[in-house]
Image (tube, rainbow, N blue to C red):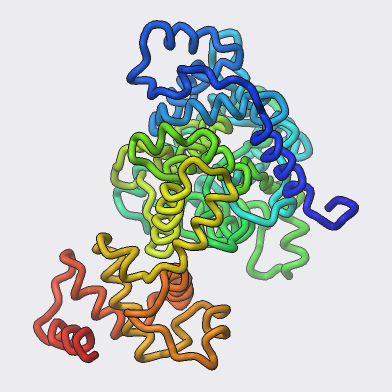
Length: 465
């Protein structure tokens, strides 16, 4: 924190946003038109652009094809002096026109692994009060002797074959092959090494910070969580009989975790509002901008499983859907992204402040009206209304429940979009809600074959008034 008590990441990004708004640099014409519509003059101008935005975009797309051409303006802006100097450093191309970190990552020691993972300038989670795009990395010993990484990888492979579905086993195998190849290269060097396993992700949801999402990932059954836990077991030894204090001390001798913020939501929103015209023209929202920036981060840090990273899902707004490698959004996250996209359209022509104002208004709209064309959300709204009837305020997020203690409980007809999305998040925390809500969800889900008895029960619940 600075002398006033403000978080240094918040302070730095407030200055960056101010600089972005005050920047009077002339926007090249090629940034105002989709790449597919460029004429010869625009193409020539992009190729001699001193900030090399197009060349960097193409290098990023070589690694992460799902990053769309629409992100060119965002990259160009981030390459401007004083906007995001750490991005400039990380995105520098070598003499062959390639980005750094295109292979398995290693360092000579745990102490050195932080600077190998990322260039200077990327701050810690604790330096920001909001979400955005984050980057994490596990760093653990490997090398001449069988050490943490080798032990963890063997256990991970055995567990994958015993417990995971075919699609997950396939992606696990890609990761395992890349790590084994990297570890073997370290062994041939004849000295102990430290392997680095990078990951990039998005923090979704109102009020959530990077630490919240990181903790979810660690406990998840995704590659990040499953392999991370195996590393901890391998580094800690006999973790079942050790005290928590002794376990942590043992683990810290052989592995570390680096958590950094790639871009705060404040700066990301400002960039989207300033450079998002091409996205709007293509019918895309701020979610697409965020997905592309996540893809850019994945490419820059080498987060793909093909090089020993922990990003399984294809990233970028145009990522192809493929079994085992596609992002699966829960309904709470879907609702938040939908609301943000509506606000992005409503605030066209404005700045980040205009977006935040529009977003507040969108959250106050009735859920049944805002999501009326989204079948998935309307099904969940029906199920949530059942919970509201049966469990009352317990269905809502804690802050909303407190606010409604002396007011009538919200219903299907009165709950607003923001409260509905927070209720979905709260329901996820309660592992799915009541049996009645499940009956209603299954009734509306064409993939679920209900018995006649359960269909009748669901209808009685839905039409009971």
